[in-house]
Structures are given as structure tokens and as C-alpha cells.
Image (cartoon, rainbow, N blue to C red; front, top):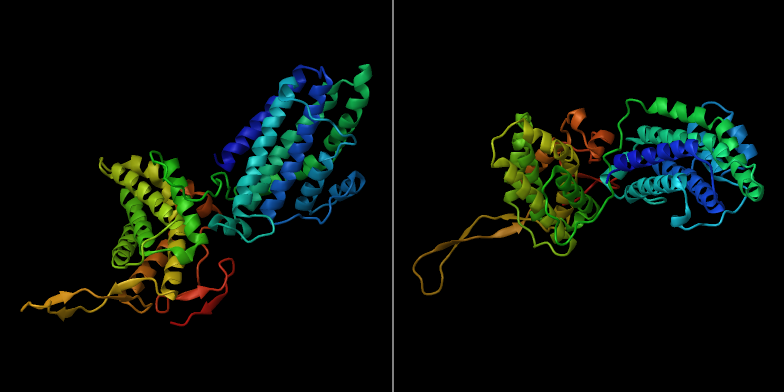
Length: 453
């Protein structure tokens, strides 16, 4: 499931909890404990997702409520205010013991669903942008470059607003006028009133307004490795997941790419553009040129995860070819539009792998044949010879030009995937057709260093 699906799950769970609080009252200490613990966990998970989106905690240390109130009263620091407000809202001046799931009422069950959903959103983000580390995926580079961050903060702000509605209803649901429950209810009600009366809701509204019309990360899913055996592909979602897993592994391990990866990746790009009834003829020609050039390269066979990546791409190609057996039409565009949005990142990934393979001299092209006469024969035969590929070889130059063209593809905004939406121009070396092998010193930077042959 994607971030967008988990966001909808969390939002629906919060609405259900709010409605349930308006229809009933807390009946037992176990219900109160579970509800208050889940409420605090929601604010904590929202703060974690915020830090992952922006690349670290906006403030070094979360202040107490008095200090948080002063920070929330400022203007022009909405990100810091959101983070501080979320941490302050999570604090309750009492330790509440955990209670078994079977003993909790409706609001607590719904709030636990929201905690789990928001936690998964954070896990998905962490798989692309691990805290304190460099991004692991092209999508992670996109997020660190600012792509999708503003819309992601707006989504967190929407969930914050929905959680504040829980706090508005919480004191009434607790109904403290019941003897032995008074001491349990009081600190929870005080925490809820602080949040409801603070400027956190106003800060959330500011961030929601700033996020309107910005690229979203709702299509982002967990960055999984290639699987063995490769899962069967029967839907566009399966195909996108397989392609994403394959190109993520290739991006992280460019030194292990072989000619098979280059061939399958370029064939994938060509198949997607051919099946798109509205495909750009220029792009079809570019991917066709790339596929033809890649077919003339050879390398050592892939092993381990590299072989699993080949299997994932092969399965996607099988599914695409099954679509091609029918009549072409608009239905193909609808089915593969999400795959189309993956192609610029795929082209950047293949270019990165091609550069690494050339440097380690692990790609081979046909050399001029020589005539050899087998022992005891009067007939000379042409012997096939291969040599390490060089950057000046025509086949390599053709492949580079085509991959650079694929990186510059323009995707219909309505059909963009998370990578294309967040970062329309994938991370790539600063290069020119006449000198195509200026390689980045660091994929996350725009710096380039000259590589010798």
C-alpha cells in the first residue's frame, strides 16, 4: 500500500474516533488508558514523519508546553511551530498503563488504527530517506531536493487538524465527574485542552494552504528489494512495484549492472512507449535506439540480487507483451501510464550503471573478426572476437544519447508517478552528447569529476 492509501486509512480512522466520542462516554479505566496512549502516539508519529520529510528535526530539543506556547505565538515559522506543537501535544502529565486490545472501546480501536497507519507512512519515508543517512532511492533524492515535501507537510497538517478534533471531544468523552476515574481523566483532559486552545490548528491551516497545488507523494511505496522468485505481474500496480524494486536496486548498486540489465531496461522503455497510443514518436525512436544499442553489448552473467532484478524486469516485459497481443487503444495508455512515469528515473539509473560498467571494463563489444583455419581444414572461418567497450565506441555513444533523451522525457502531470511528480528532471551528470561521460562524484550533488579511460 502507498502513502496515499495509508493517509486515507489514518484520516478515516480519526474521523471514526471523533464520531464515536460524540456518541458515548468512557466506561472503564482500560478504555481511557488505551485512548490517551493512542492519542499521544499519533502526535509522536506525526512529528517523526515531519522530521523525515524535512531531513531532520526542525529544533534540536522539544520544549515544554510553556515554551511551546511562546513558539506557537510567533509568525513565519510554521514548520518549527508544527514540530514543536506536535511534541508538546503528545505530552500527558501521567503514565498510563497499556491495556489489552479486547478491553478497549470504539474510539481507542480507531485511534490505534490511525497510529498504525501514520507509523507505516513514516516507515515508507524512512525506506527512501533514512534518518541521518544519504537517500537510498531516486525518490529519496527527490524528497531531499524538496520534491513533494510541501504537499507532504500539508498532509501531516490535515491529520494534525483531525487529531485536534479528537482533543476537542476528549474532555467531554472522559466526563471526569465520576469519583475514582477523576484522577485518571484530569491530566488527559488538560493535555487535550492545551492542544485545542493552542495555535497548532492555525499553523496546520497555514501549511495546508501552502501545500495546495504542490506535487504529492501519495504514490510512494516502501522501497523493497528484488524478490526471488519474482512475483507474477498481472496488474499495473504489480508492474510498477516490480520496476520500482528493480531500478532502486540498480540505483544503489550501479557497479553490479550488466548488459542484461541495460537490455531489459531499454526494452521496457520501448515497450511502454509503443503500447501508449498517444506515445511521443520521438521518445519511441529514442528508446528503440537505446534497445538496439544495448543489444550489441555483452557482459558476465548476473548473480545473486542482480539476477533477481533481471527476473523482475523480465516478468514486467512478459506482462507488457501480453497487453500488446490485443488491439492497441486508449486502454493501454490507462494501464501503463504509471509505468511511463517511471521511465525518466529508469533512464537515469541505466546511464549511471552504464558509466560504472565502462569504468570497470565489464562491458564488451564485437571486435573486427579474424580469419582462422581449423586444423586439418582447407577453409578459413571468421572467428568472433569481443573486446572491452570504450566510451568512444559508436554503440556506446548511441546508448548514451538515447538514455539522456529518456531522462528528459516530459510526462503528463495527470499520469506522473511519485518520482516524476517530485523530481521531473532525475539526478544526472552534467554532460553533453559530444562528451557523454562526465560522471557525478556524488549522486546527490550536481558536482562532476572527469574520469579517465
